[in-house]
Image 1 (cartoon, helix red, strand yellow):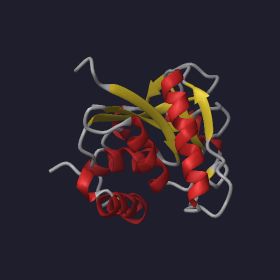
Image 2 (cartoon, rainbow, N blue to C red):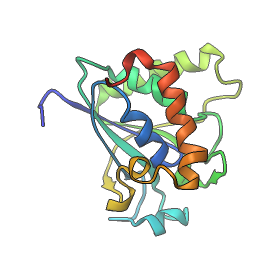
Image 3 (spheres, rainbow, N blue to C red):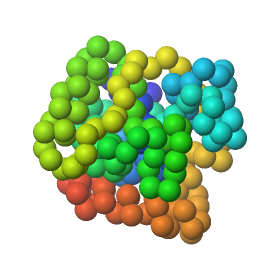
Length: 180
């Protein structure tokens, strides 16, 4: 992997949605679904789904900052999920679906704070942002069957009803940033 790549770790509901949306963008090298922010070592999907491990479903987005910036990644993030609903995205309810940015260094923290202020001031969302901003402690990749879930299961009902509209939104709002 190119040493100039950076990594963003984000939680905004089901990781299948975030993964599918970010994979559309030019400059995104890879996206890995996983878990962060909890108190259990090597959590499983089944355990995280109980809401008792403290983990959020997250994605790690590896990107080339010469093509897409961390701030741009965050702008997309705030477009594809509702950052005003605490511990829920649509029908997905529980602390594992919280809106959270796990920063990797002080620069990411400062950028995230600035973008969050811009989003809050923009009026795009009528409610108050509940997105948490925390340092990344550990990231645990999700089980293999969760990786590339949307591309491997496009006809699955959840993918058709929940994931596909988010991908379509990214394609519409960020069409100049899409992979060819």
